[in-house]
Image (cartoon, rainbow, N blue to C red; front, top):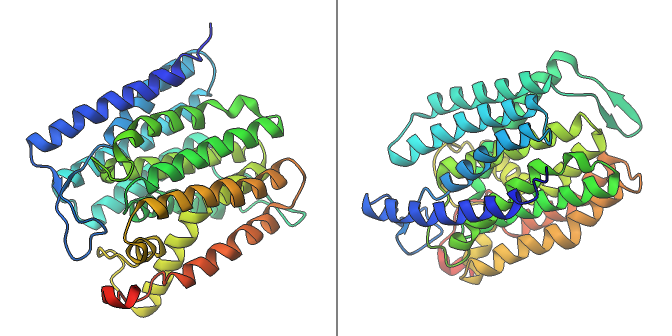
Length: 343
């Protein structure tokens, strides 16, 4: 039985659900009202990312039934992704203390690692490194960081959606070129779920993703990268390269704020992409630039790693150096300046 019909079906489900969620948010006044820490200027409904969650999770039983994705991976995606989405949904509708959110996030990460069997050995500059139980702990931390950095980076119209689609479709190309076509389904279906939502979120956005969608996307992308890592460690390096824009901006910003002694759990708008959007006065050029970096810089390096034998760690360094330069150029993590100083 062919399951290719799932690809447009998931996109259509996400598209229609987002429209319904927009009406729901407007009816209940679930609105993101701009404030001094916002990167937008117009009150906008939020919570549309639930459509991504539902569209993706609905596809999982069919993917399992068709033996397109292993049941262990489906248990990880459904359990961990579902928990993170529920926590985010509750936070979108009220407020959950940071400690309880983190407890839920770490529990979800541990659940995922259990089903994936932990962190596999990774090839680093010709050496195979197996970190044992320390690797499993680092794997959970990686998943928790992925879901939180995705939440941090979801600050201007379309950027989180474009990043997810570029990373997922880029990974599909890496899988196909590397001879791992059996791994295509999870990232392909996720890309389609995000594409349906992006219709409503493309600048100027008519609805925002919300914590439910951004957290779900972050941890699911992390889990898909773990699924690939068990097949080939080069694919893990490929995923880290493809997600480089978000990883570098979020990590660089966090480290700078930690060193300065800021309360890192408080809202801010000091990411490089936020400074860049204020400098140009629009969201669209920054969102399109992120897509361009993914397509014309990160994807070719990922292909060199997975297809042509470039060492993964070396490829990561080559990919990240210009991104770090951009983070510095656009003041990632610096104290927020008055608007006039950024023009």
